[in-house]
Image (cartoon, rainbow, N blue to C red; front, side):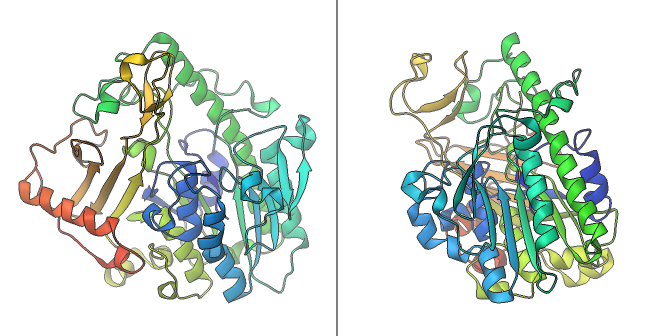
Length: 481
């Protein structure tokens, strides 16, 4: 099971999930997404490809999100389709697929992506009530009655039905993709008063000026207005409340597998499609930025031969999920076009063994293509055209030149991030994440020139990589100050 909901903290709302998956298996502390936005990230999960290879650049049809072009070029090669056609899996999907799924110009809800034996797809983007599901290509409308319609619970119940009625003679794959904790952050009635005293984390980068960062970050007003702080704290609480129902969903599915005697031979994955920020560098609320809080995600896995209570610092990305699923099914990833690599060997071997036998790559690529309106935001005329996602006090979370590519390196000798913007000044940001985990200081102007050149070269290689070349190239970026 892969859950592609948005990101969260592990403390309170997901205690059962952490116990049933993380404590019972392995938790990856260096898991990242290839792009910090829903549709490109989900496309990377499904295809095992970086955005420059699957060509989904944002959440719009024009950006290739669930478009006809996506359907023709990528959908049939997504890993669930390969599981079905090459390994005889029965496959089940429930929840949010790609943001524009069900759009009339993309075949409507009648379109069922190839590779799914049983399909329950949410029409378009995140909702909790008053939504339409495509149930194997037929529209099923839902209202606002909690007992029948609350989407997280509905997905849980339909997942349990699949487990009950599926064939016991074929292997199965389930993907349950809850929109929670995505806005509009509607909690189940029993959880609406939870976390009343919780606030967004006050990390060292909370509500401070990103003085040496890209212009979009520098324009954020610091300190934030009281109304912005109140808004982001409120959003944080609401997000946590919606996750309590996700925690219940995970518990129901794991318990059902246990009762059916299938838990011990089933791999259960829990992860997310992007991070989220609430107040870091005075940005009230969004994703889309290159920093750890937007690109880092939780990843926990339990399953056969995975020892409990393991933690791995191995670098993994969401492009690795598809290859790992194929590896579990015995399908050779090298015969696909996927950019990622399987991390199954890391999970099933002891630490001493995998140090000797498993060579994972030490860097990954993160890509994002910014969006901005070609007319000025009437509320923020001084910022000019090209911005979007603006808050009332003219803090804009995105712009057309918020377009960047990063190399994220995690190796024994280096824990670095190197990013280049595709803008007029080719702005560069570099962080030593070991000494500066909150990315307070951009060291682009002080780092060793040789390291800078190596990272620039590595970035160019990754931006043009495809398939095997994405996982075999290496660079040495260990010299840093």
